[in-house]
Image (cartoon, rainbow, N blue to C red; front, side, top):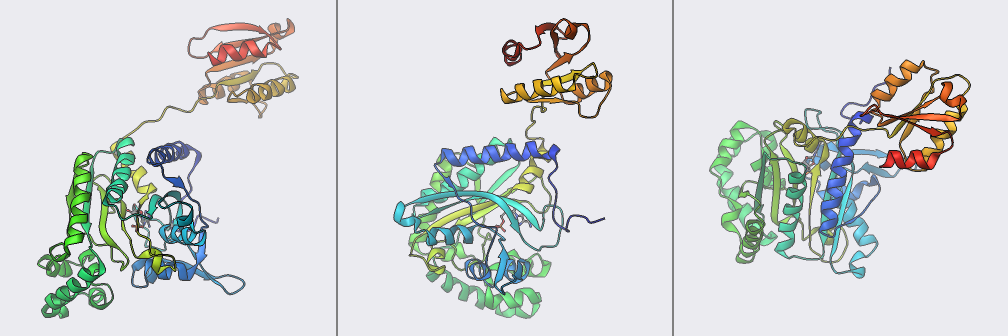
Length: 419
Ligand code: AMP
């Protein structure tokens, strides 16, 4: 038997309501902040991600689904959305249409990671990108939107962590200081971290190796070396968060190891999902649009993992959804009336009701069981003496009350059900 590929999952009908619920909250929060949806292709030219995410990252270095298509082009399934959104922004000159573009997206992403709880190879993200302004209030807006979405889902066990990476000049200076500091410990670093000292030194703060962590414990922090402008930017973000009553803490070790990141970075973690605890991450990327061949336009964004969010919701029992219900189930109690039932059902469906009936030639008892299983609010009984008199019987399943109608009195039945 062929099974789903490792690290991918099916979303079965019984899981769809909670996905739809999450999606509806995401859409409503983003639209209240006037973000507009953008959809881009699921695959892109490989070079977009190599340039837009960075060769030295895990994503580009080890995790991308890259293949040559039949014409020999190198194609990659998108591992995240920022690069694609920025490509589309540049390609369609969205900056010429309005000065600030506030975009959001939702959809599947692909990374060949080692599958484990909370890590999949096809997973889903929603996120936002705001392109065209360096206002720190937008940095705060991103964090507020993500937090509001989580709060609306009823999530409680959340921690917002923020940091600033400043601008490249002060960062370069700091990287040299950090490198100098690490020199005496170099030989003790893990082999991965040794490599990163030259390629992506900030990522040493992310190392899971005990030894690396001990060494980084006493390392100087970038926050202590930020220039005045960056400090002011960061201060304004913090003020806006305080005013919005979002609890947060500064985590000077929170790095997003990408060179085009500037100023604010943030993560929201949940205490309810185990070790893969980041529900979302984001930051300002004032250098990315230019890096991808566009104008010198600042941007900021975040991405949130939908599987993890739903897992947190489940573990916290943060919301419950009403059971799905049918408005009406038609029970055909007499052979030969199947066509009448079928056409009656069709008529009610075309008038907006959720309706089903038997297709398995089942007994009346089994049809009634099916009406119960589908939580039908009403049952329409078709056949017997009533039908011989030209009537059909509507039964209210919660009260048990029955009412007879003429067999073509659709409007009367409709208004009874819609009441
Ligand atoms: P990133 O784009 O790596 O910053 O990830 C943003 C968010 O996407 C994370 O905080 C996770 O919630 C989610 N995420 C990233 N990678 C995966 C994965 N392999 N499986 C499930 N969720 C993921």
